[in-house]
Image: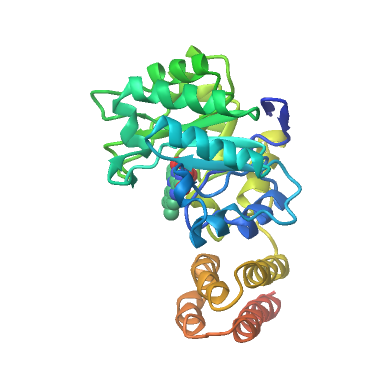
Length: 332
Ligand SMILES: Cc1cc2nc3c(=O)[nH]c(=O)nc-3n(C[C@H](O)[C@H](O)[C@H](O)COP(=O)(O)O)c2cc1C
């Protein structure tokens, strides 16, 4: 069972996609996840306020050099005209898809409610979606939660508003705004949303294994699965899920020599992308996730976090993985 879908005219080659995560899904990580089987990736959110587009943070989030794939830029905000203008600027700069974030729990922009806080105000949602869709020629997509809170799970209404406004695909995180990240994601509302609209729907929330992905696909009949936190330190998750959906069999975990090569390649791309001192700083975060399940990972992480330069970090990561490989050979 392998659903394939389109976002506007763009075919999405694999049904498993990377969720946008601020501070994480930068160009190096998106490129890596696509290489390992993610069918589609979305950038970290940038302010839907044109005045903030030229800040250093936004410029880094919007850098796409060398990225040949479909570029989806996520915007967040509350004011329809500013959001429309931000969408236009991003489309002019080459975004192939504009994604609107109404799924992020804690976001306030200019001290006004934005992200999932908007779900309470259906009329404003409609105004924002209409303004953004009208402003650009590229497909506009939307990411939401299942609703505002358990008593106001208005995801189906929002989905209908979105389809009516011309939104071309919808990602739904199976929690309400009030849930934040607590409890488990639920997929019944996602199934109701999928049944209520015709545009492609991606299910998101707690999808951490190939079996869970298949269960959610079958339960909801959605077109795609969106994976966030389970990809941290594990970009192989996309390949594993796609293979399982295609064949019903599990791929073995990546061999340690592949893990070493991927991690070192990822580090190098972070240094190239961010330069000094940001590259080594951001590398620490990813390295923590990469090594947490490996023997000696926590001791290694503490030592790695003290290293200031790219050269030191690369040498130390290389040594850590070579020792793991050696240990494996000795144990065999
Ligand atoms: C660190 C972090 C940053 C996130 N940033 C964004 C964001 O910028 N835009 C967005 O729409 N969702 C954001 N999210 C939510 C994720 O896209 C996703 O909906 C959520 O993590 C649930 O999926 P998961 O259980 O697969 O992680 C973020 C989540 C995390 C953990």
